Amino acid sequence: MIKAVRGTRDLLPPETALWNFVEAAVRDVFRAYNFHEIRTPIFEDTQLFTRSVGEETDIVSKEMYTWEDRHDREPTIWELVLTLSSRFADSRVSFLRGGGAAVFGPHMILESDDIVRLFLVTLVPLPPDFDSLAGYSKLVEQTFPGKTIEYGIAFPSGIPVSAGTKHQAQERHVRLEEVKVRMPQSLTLRPENTAGVVRAYIQHDLEKRGLNKLYYIGPQFRRERPQKGRYRQFYQIGAEVIGPATAGSESPARDAEILELLATLLDRLGIKDWILQLNSIGCANDRAAYNEALRQALQPVASKMCVDCQRRAVTNPLRVFDCKVPEDQPIIEKLPRISQFLDEPCRQHFQQVQEILKSIGVEFQLNDRLVRGLDYYTRTAFEFTHGALGAQNAILGGGRYDGLSEALGGPAAPGIGFAIGEDRLVMSLSESAEAVYRKPDVYIAPLGAGMNKEAARLARELRRHDIVVELGDESFRLKKSLETASKMGAKYALIAGENELSTGVLALKNLATGEQKAVPRNLLAQVIQS
Ligand code: HAM
Image 1 (cartoon, rainbow, N blue to C red):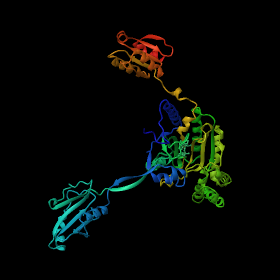
Image 2 (cartoon, helix red, strand yellow; image 1 turned 60 degrees about the vertical axis):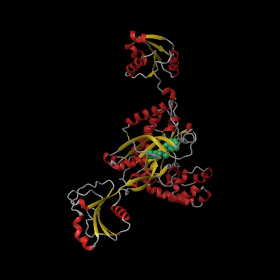
Image 3 (cartoon, rainbow, N blue to C red; image 1 turned 45 degrees about the vertical axis):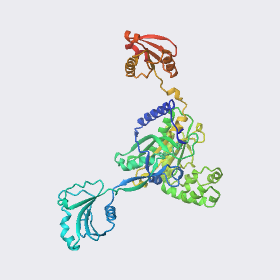
Image 4 (cartoon, protein in one colour; image 1 turned 90 degrees about the horizontal axis):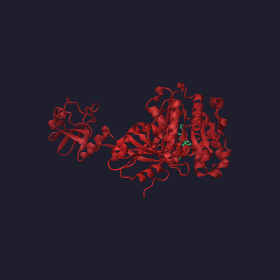
């Protein structure tokens, strides 16, 4: 039997009702904060992630689903020239001086023992008034006396050859079909969505719109060791606020708004006892100084640490904090803290974020060991944890990434965002799937041959009133229909037999109480909904 791949899973009803419940609540909250949805592709150019999340991170170095894909591109003129010369391998190749290379391409001369071929190589269709190659006949005949001369035009596949040149009859058109150039391209299933959003911001010039408040809901992929709350295909609900600094994107007010939104969202979903852990990891300058301090502090102790840390100590010391090896923790515990390295603007920015949070009553804990596992972060970094989740207790994480757009070749665009692990969010709900799973209001039991048609008509009428209808089948006995209806939790069974339909009064059975009533057809919707 083929099963779902390790670390992936099927979400089935009734659990999917819980996912829909969460997503509907989330969309409501995003609406209130004026966020709009963005959907980016599930796979991207691998470089997008290596350049943003960072080569040294666990995500990029160990966890990405990457493969070599390829796309076909059109050949360059020189690739055409090479292809053509390989077709006439017995010929010597030269080029005609002044042969129009600037407009269409070079004129190639292919000379063998008894024949000379003059080809124009071109990437573009020739205009109808193109002055034919035969115009060169005198020159070529003089240069190669006594040889047969053939004229031709070489096109790549995909270019129409028909463009009528004046002396077509004398010319040979060579179509170079095989010259599709296969380009290898490294692609990756997205391990996170911030990089994709920032790429889209740059690609579509979203800077023009000022402050962009975007959210997404969708699958992400990381090759992590699967365990409770950790999957290889998991889902994130995330948001990004990004724009030019003049639109306010750098303001601590954005940070506070994001954090307050999250507190509101979790409260609204009835998730209690979350803890907001907050830190500032400074700007690029602070980080350079901090990295240097870490490097120095690590130098004498690195040899006692795991191999990953030994490498990180040299290449990207901040990543030492991602280490999960228990023996390394006492060393990591003694390392300098980023809070000692913040410059004045970063310190003030962080101070203001905290002040706003206090004034609106969002509680937080400062945690200066929180550096987050992705390289693009600057300044504010945060995680919300929840005790009930066990080892994988981060329900969401996020932070600022003020230099990311520039690192990807875009304009300066400070930004801040977060991603909630939806799988973990659903796990921490107290709500049960049963409670939000909508069961049928009514089960229609057609009784006897020919009644499926009538039942379908009834179902259509009732569904127009937003009543959830399940249809039985005329081949079922009444007893079976009633049992099926009870099993699926329908509120009522509606009996549609020939008698009932001809009198226009139908039998409606309340499946919880067993009480049966005769209800005129035109009142059915009203009674079912009451
Ligand atoms: P992240 O901390 O890597 O941040 O992931 C955010 C959340 O996704 C985690 O807190 C966790 O709940 C969930 N998550 C991560 N990996 C898994 C997994 N294997 N299985 C289940 N859930 C998982 C980011 O992804 C950033 N892009 C967040 C962000 C947005 N920062 C700024 N904007």
